[in-house]
Picture 1: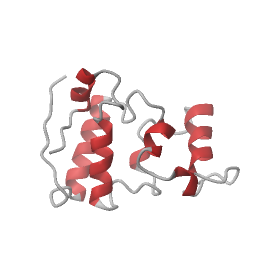
Picture 2: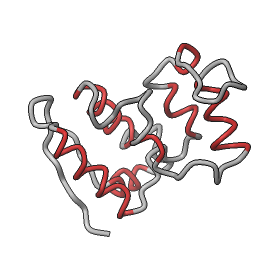
Picture 3: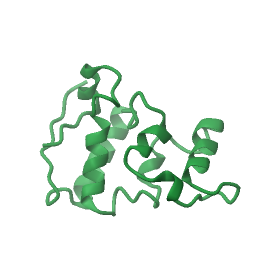
Picture 4: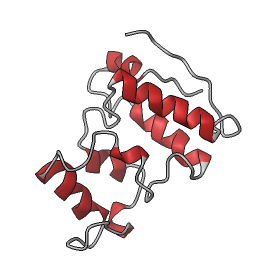
Length: 124
């Protein structure tokens, strides 16, 4: 897989740029959560226990994500995070999107250091 290097900062992370990055992630089939489960990955960035659930059976985002990605993994597509308004990665604060990208390539998230390149992104 070719390596794509992107130089980003808060000023350059426009909506159009974010969409291009998300498209790259989707097309490349990169697992945004790496070696971590989705709840563990997102818990490194967001207070999931304080976030609402979109499913009335659960009190918070943890229960919601567990139900629809662990218990019934076909309920939501693998790239659900990019369209979930609670996280607002595309239209929300730029620094949140940049932190998300940085977390994607963090060595603790990628099982093997060489896999960081698989994410197709290097945030500078």
